[in-house]
Length: 83
Image (tube, rainbow, N blue to C red):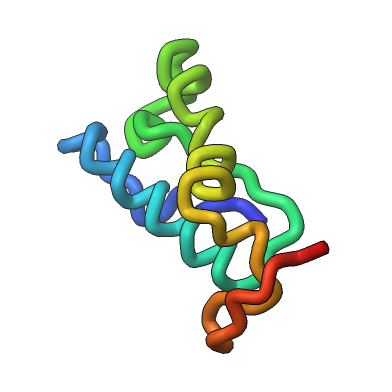
């Protein structure tokens, strides 16, 4: 799964951080097995080195801090932990 680059804006690139995070969350909740998140400045040009290193932890933060990756079906109401 890759987040949508179409939704990214060149005018306010830092707002794209929130957009990319929400896209990643939707992918995780949808059951994506693999995830690639667009850099926040991709709406304007090829991603900068800073943006590329900044975008890396999106998936890890969602997985570790939300706990979504450790449950069977978070949207189905099942919070039974994966064994």
